[in-house]
Length: 186
Image (cartoon, rainbow, N blue to C red; front, side):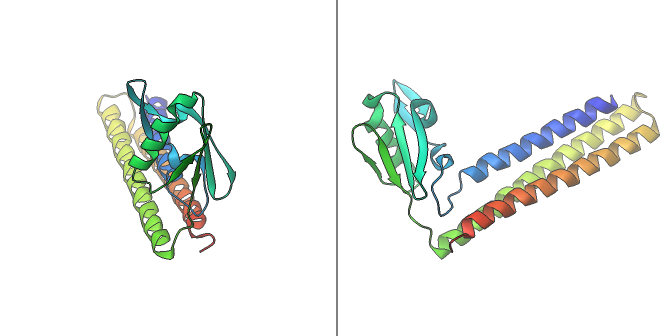
């Protein structure tokens, strides 16, 4: 019971951290990165398909994203999806590949990005604290059901608090690193 609760708590905290990292990858910095177009879904073959399933996405230069569709017939659909997304990109296709020039960020936009990073980090911390609360409830229930002794319950709660502190530190580090990338070249 003790190990199950601890493992479940850690797995759920890990998911919250992974969710934050995925969200942070989609935030623009001053340089191009394939994560910037990951959220784009393309209308083709009769359904909404994620861009990364239709094309190879790379960044040969710091200010450019290059999209190479596996099937050249979907280039127009991909371009349409990029324009329709509110990412503000202007794709240029040559029949084989699509190039997107990522403009440098203005100081004001950088500040907005940093604010968004802080919001995402706070959301992740709230998720982690909710997982802690659930873990503590499970520990209390385990003690009520006589599956855990009082000492085990208290030890488990300490372990859960250590996990919480550790994951909050990881959230802070991920957010700080992304903020530094956004403010780079400012």
